[in-house]
View 1 (cartoon, rainbow, N blue to C red):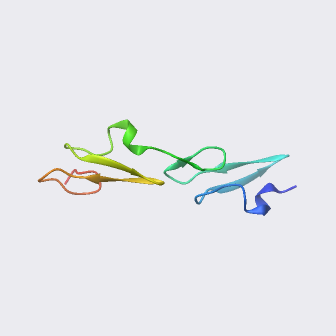
View 2 (cartoon, rainbow, N blue to C red):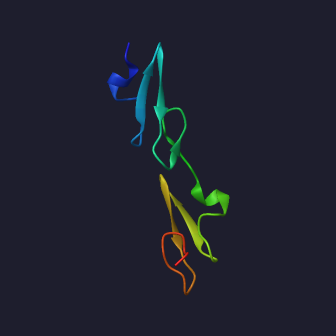
Length: 77
């Protein structure tokens, strides 16, 4: 049985890998778990937003609110 053929296995853009009697998922960036349904909290590392920026975790990603004088995805410009 090809569990990947159902399209009900890997979520959030994950790639299904059929194995003997089962399957595994290769998750896209920002997602984890058996079926790629658990959001990774990029803000938990405290290394995401730099120079005093505030990290806002979003579904599958994050955004930074930069302090005055800093810009860019991680407040490094």
